[in-house]
Image 1 (tube, rainbow, N blue to C red):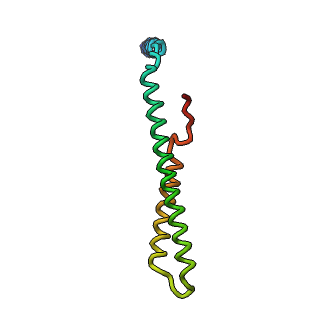
Image 2: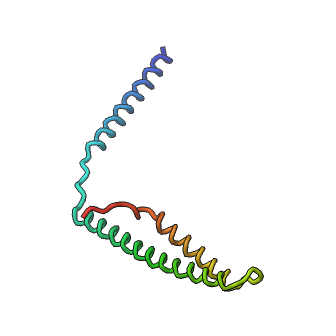
Image 3: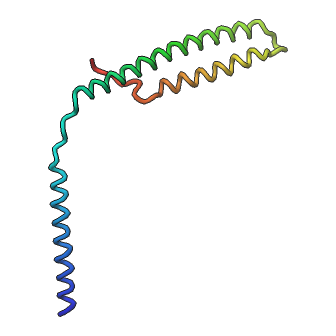
Length: 118
């Protein structure tokens, strides 16, 4: 008899605690989310647009530099012979490699390809 009353007491406690959790969950789900502030949203869009414009400007500058370096590298290689490898050629190649990696990283940056409606 005592075992049955203990089991019933545990069942009652678990049932009541489950009901309390359900009420708390339902109450938290009924909270209204305030609408987003239009001014804040506009500021975020403008900041994102400005970051994308800066990134695009940086990419143009870097690719122009890459083109210039590649042209210089070609001239240097064309003027050398098969027996001489200039230190200048190696330095230019390393600089091109670093700049190309920087351009690739900027192109992969998060949000770069997102479109921003006006």
